[in-house]
Image (cartoon, rainbow, N blue to C red; front, side, top):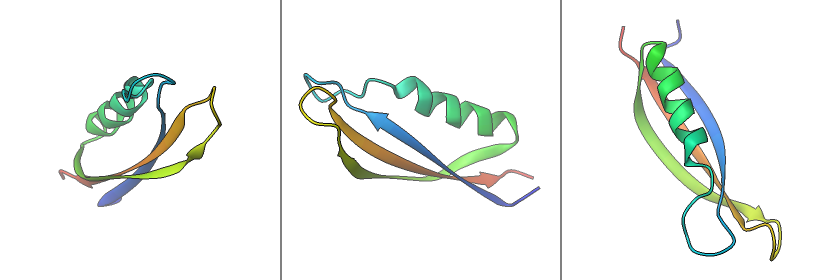
Length: 69
């Protein structure tokens, strides 16, 4: 079992407002690694571009998980 695992999740912001439209995918990634015995160590975000007016912006979240074992 690796000591660290790195996961990237793309978050798409809604057209109106600043809330992310798919935080459930971030939550799913965290819970999936937690069920495997990892805890979230670090999370960073970076802009990964825009799909234009109708698509909203995209953020890339990089999550580093650390093994509890």
